[in-house]
Image (cartoon, rainbow, N blue to C red; front, side, top):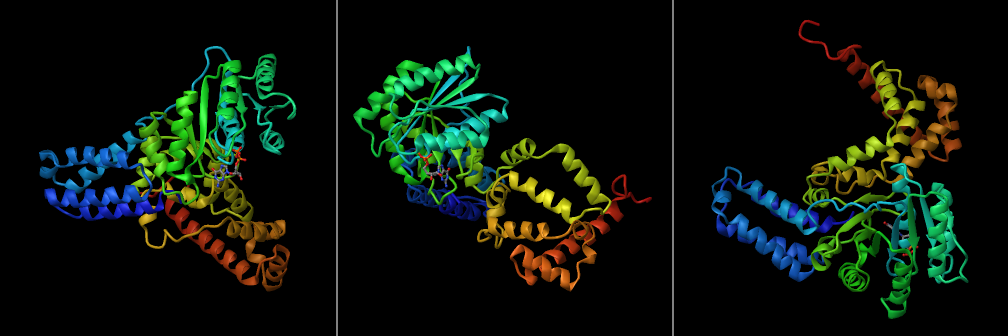
Length: 443
Ligand code: GDP
């Protein structure tokens, strides 16, 4: 998980502070010393750290904090606000052209995740009912065009390409024309990267910029590269006047320095965060929610939004009805697993729940997709009747299911037992609830 080291260190510092009824100036100083070290270790730019700590200190040593009943909480609140401010304060939204199409130019070094992010961004826009056209201007990296075409097929978005023998400027220009002809409301241009920032690259990008007059120039940077990402952002910004940054690979064990320094150092806001290789692993970046995650306060808002946009409300209602009436079968179970999977990898979902990373055992919990895959295989190896009436699954059927799913009898037994327990619990629960909700004291 990204920020793991930083998050656990900060939460430790504040855990100690919270426990204190009264804070002395020395307590605050001591805590801030640790915050400073934690931020430096997370690879946050040292100037940024210095200013950050000074701002927090100025507010934390104030009389009001010392006199408050819960001084530790007040200090955490100050840190939360300052962390949020550091990352840009409020969400920085994607620009929208007065007259469509809105043109988004993606730039960045090779391997940062430009092409992948181009596909992800298109998918995100499609979810808002937009019709983006992807334009393949990376004519240098072998297979970059193909990669974009595959992504386009996957998300069912058109990809404009003229192969790799035509100049990127020409491709961009013609791509724009096609978008206008076909009434696409967004054009996302994937450009070439290099291993390092060089003049030739910048010249090419400037020429494309000149030709298409983008509404957004988004720099894609790899969060795993820490301070390098910030340096790259600085040099790109000087030359290209970026409108935003996309941080990728935040699902890896990045220490988080880039996310915390990019805005402060370059003045350029982070607009999106990518947290995985899959095409729906891109989220708008909300500084306040990110600060909450780092401080272990969870991110319920993102979770709720994910649920709203991915979970079918009618299906959820039907599921609830079945749960109440204890009609839940293995078929429903599979269906529910599918719905949960749409929210993203389970460990990322858990991370959004407040206090989850402090719960005993939770930190080491690896809910791996492989395990989910086994459960799915077991259920899929059942006959329709078995799925609906799990009680009929006797020893020989268990053996057959284990063989069919490539798992073991123990695994099959465990799953059936868990399912049984769940059904029993539901029966009790629905007995208590009745069809119209909880029974009052008068029954
Ligand atoms: P480009 O050269 O900038 O176009 O980079 P690509 O889009 O080809 O991405 C380079 C590699 O990074 C690919 O293997 C991607 O799957 C991977 N990648 C991109 N974004 C993410 C991310 O958010 N998380 C992870 N784990 N991998 C990513």
